Image 1 (cartoon, rainbow, N blue to C red):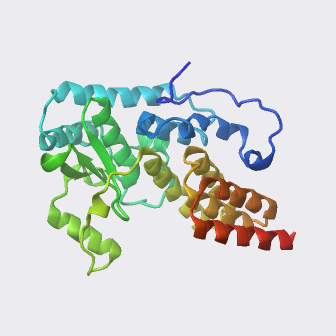
Image 2 (tube, rainbow, N blue to C red):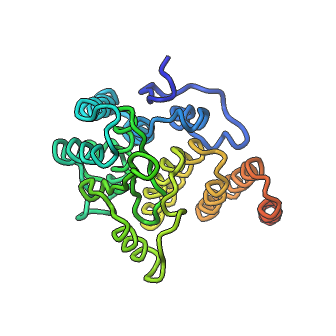
Length: 296
């Protein structure tokens, strides 16, 4: 049996007819159920992102893609002996993933959904900041180094190493090192000229948060294009991967109401009540459920 670190390219799961909240998830989503059950530290970012992308590529053999990820790490490990300083390791990652493998940001078709689909990112060697950060961070981790995706607004960055010697890099822009002045300019572009970098902007994201951010990129673009069904499918996946993230259930209910699915919205809000202990939010959700009950 495969462990939770790698996806399984299995046939659709045969299950009894579901009831309650579980009824909203298709058999295909059950193929990623393990991602929501294991500890966050047990999630391999790159393999998990491939598993999520596979839901849109049922005919694709995943093994070649997983082999690509293995080769990234093997090449990094070959060039980066243990104890290599973070800035030198950043140079190795840049060499392997940009100079040798050709991965870079898609500046011409930034909003293309393929840029947040890791299977297509590997095929095209183009992606969004978050999808490329996943490749860099995962390659460093697999090679035995500390690396994290950072909660930078609007443009995900990566930190290589820890402590005073750590460096921040931008995989979207050829893996280059981001100096403090560069970070200040980035934050100002996203949040306004008066914004300054803070610890919050450089906080490492949990693995689940990175995967959710990847899927949210796709969901936001789908909703902007008027494809509510596609956006809902992506929120289904987010809810499987991160069932304790309360905001996902709220957004899911909102989209279900846009899709005139009142029963589905009630199921999502009921799930939200099960995942939050925040008194104010529980009161808000209960009021929303009462309003939906009157509509029915």
